[in-house]
Image 1: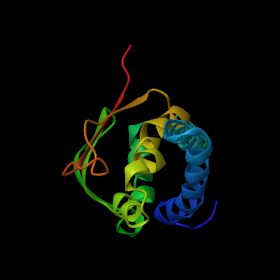
Image 2 (image 1 turned 120 degrees about the horizontal axis):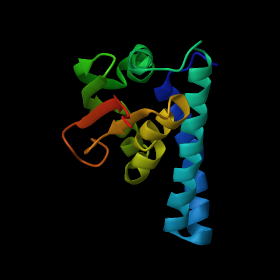
Image 3 (image 1 turned 60 degrees about the horizontal axis):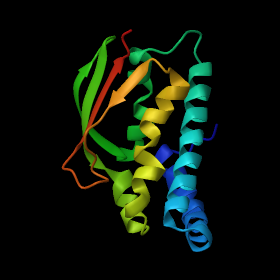
Length: 155
């Protein structure tokens, strides 16, 4: 794995995916372009979750997840307010999202949720499918903050 921050990786990916989005839109329409880009980013997030889980000698839990959170906040990419972080729950609000700012600057604000936000739940699928994310709002979609609430699924 490279030493690039996730923010830098997302910028590079977005530069390529922007063109793919435009080509698919021209050939098959916007709905198809959104579906393809969304599924592409979903598959990538699941694969990245699997790779991070494979680095551990046990099934990842919320304490493991909290330990890797700095990967996403590196270089001030996310400013977060931690509300709770323990074995039962990890809850925080994102008060600034440089991912959203970057996509808007690149002219991709309208699909930023496909490029980043939707990856959050998909990452859990690969990392540990028992980790569940509930989020009701995002900065990407115009909210004042993103409300991340992770827990382990119960029965």
